Every structure is written in C-alpha cells, then in structure tokens.
Length: 411
Ligand code: GLV
Ligand code: MN
Ligand code: MN
Image (cartoon, rainbow, N blue to C red; front, side, top):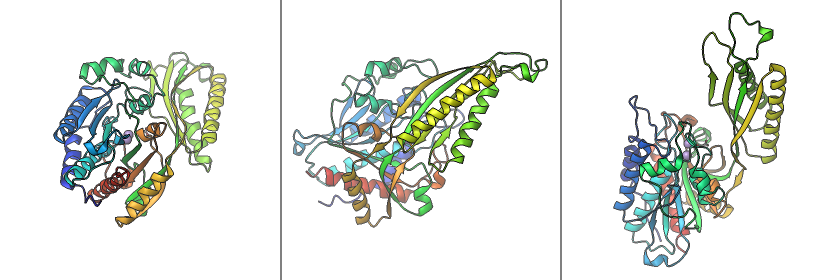
C-alpha cells in the first residue's frame, strides 16, 4: 500500500516547539534526564501522543511508549520506533527529538491513510540517552533490554548528587510497567548524523550498518596541595600537571595512528582550584571510541599503562572508575537493505555508514533486529546549539521512515 507522505508542517512545528521547552535564563537548551525541564518536555510529548489517540505506557525506568494497536495488529509483536528527548547541556533541537517526533508523525500519517498494520506500531522515548547527569548513557534502553537491572539503574547518583529513582518519582515519570514488557519485532531509529559525512557528500540518507564501541572512564589523580611560589618544580606532586599529560598523551597517540579511534577529555576539575595552589586532586573523564573491539581494548590498555607510568613519574596516585563500556554493534542487514531500497525508490541519494555517536538502537539491537536511518548535520555539528539539518532532509528522512514502517508493518 502507498501510504503517501508525512505532514511536514506538523513535524517541523513540533521539533521547534519541543526545542523551545527547557531553556535556561541564558536561552540554552538544557533538558537533562529526569530534571524539571525534562519533565516539561515529557509532558508535551505525552499530550501529543494522547492527541494522536495512542495508548500510553511508562515503565519503571521512565521510558515512554505511545502504542498504536488497532484490531488488524492482532497479538503480533510490535514494530518499535523511537529515540530520546533528554539533551546535553546547551544542546541543539534535533538530537533524539527528531526520531521520537518523526515516529509519532509516521504513526499519525499511517492512521490517516487508513493503513491497517499487521502488527502494533509503537513510538518510544527512552530515558537518559545522553548520560550527562547519570551514567551510563543509553540507560533507559539498556535497562529495557534487561542488561542492567532496573533497581541498580534507579539507584544511580547523578553529577548533582540526585538519585535517578527519586528524581523520576518527583517528576511523575516512575512508571508501573516492567522494562522489556514489550519485545519488539524490530526497532528503527531515525536520527541526525551528528557528523560531517552526509552533508559533505551531498547525500540525504544514511543507512547505518554499524555503531562503534564506546568506553567511558573517570580518572582521579591525587597529589599534594602546596605553595605555588615556594615549592621547587622538582618537589611537586602536581595532580593537575599529571592530568594534563594524560590529555596530551591521548590526543597525540590517537592522531599518530591511522585508525578511526577518537578520544575526548570532556570534563576536568581541579582541587582546590586556586591560582596559587598546586592542585592536590584532578578528576577528569575519558571518552574513547572505535568501531573495532580489539583496537578499542588496545587503546584502553595503552591508557592504563600510561596512567601507571604517570603515577610513578609524577609521584601521584591514580584511581580509575569505569562509567560505561559498550562493544561495537552491527545492525540488521535486512533492514539496512530495506532502508537503502526505500531511499532509492524516493529518489534520494543514500550511502551505508557507521555511527560515531551512541544511540538507543545499539541497546535494543540486543533484543530485536534493529537499524538506523541518518540525515545530514550541517558542518557535522552536534551537542551544540548550532546543530542544524535542512528542512528538506528532515522531511526526506521521515518519509523514508514512513515507507520502511509501511513495509515492516504490512506482514
Ligand atoms: C550520545 O550522545 C553519545 O555520547 O554518543
Ligand atoms: Mn541522540
Ligand atoms: Mn546526544
């Protein structure tokens, strides 16, 4: 059946409306997981799901589901679409939100086209994909697969000292459903690329074949605070300097290799953090990613060796905590091919590609055939308010999702 095309105005209007929810005094979009501002975004989403006539389910980790299960769907396993609506600090408006709102848009389009799905179609918004406030990232989808116990996840303490479970209760999103209550027939996530490839090559659609492995660690270096003016350089146990050496080590090592490995130190804090005091403590995070598991393990081992060396050379103590570790994921090849064929049938330039970012699809792939559709990010900019995807590409991606869903929900 030809189910037509999505209503661009409705989808784009919602993306902008949701993008205005959760702005701070400086105008920055900050909807961290289970915060007051994220509650406002969740409330808005729920209202849209209800207006679309969907059945709402919320599970114990706060994942939200809008379920379309007409009679034609029978007792068959559901086709799930989705992503997340939590954001990083000072975020763009598309990351995650596009996939959730396009999923809703697709369901509404199918309903008005009189399409009779052979299985339920569900749109999901997973809790805490970003992992900024509570680690690990992709937490709601990870819990949904059963790989992380829900009670353990709910006990997670955030960067602000808050406990996730208490925060979900407080904002009214600690649901009753057990995570994993619905095992999907397949899962499709539409997302902005967040990298430069599609825009640079002038292509509108990415059929995502793989997602690279992710390793998050928190490193604490302990030295001695002392006077900046009187302590000879040879007598210092400078935790700040030791941390800076790690930053430089990571960058130089990764740049010198021909591998696609990426390494980022995104957080760093010194104590006591004073101009005339040698830092007694430095705490920083390491985000290491690589599409190849063996190479990622090699990079982790190289970092561990260097930390040992630093401890000896700088006379400091080093402590490492693992925050997240996910192996590379290969998506379902049949769905990848379907996405490619669908894009071609719409006359859209499409390429196969690998995802550099983490996504809920990498978790759901543990319990159901999964794949992702990417649209271009201008300049490859994301996790930044300048994140931008042209309207034509947003519409094209949603129409590809519509056709893929039409195909997968026809039998
Ligand atoms: C999720 O946004 C990630 O860190 O890749
Ligand atoms: Mn995202
Ligand atoms: Mn993100």
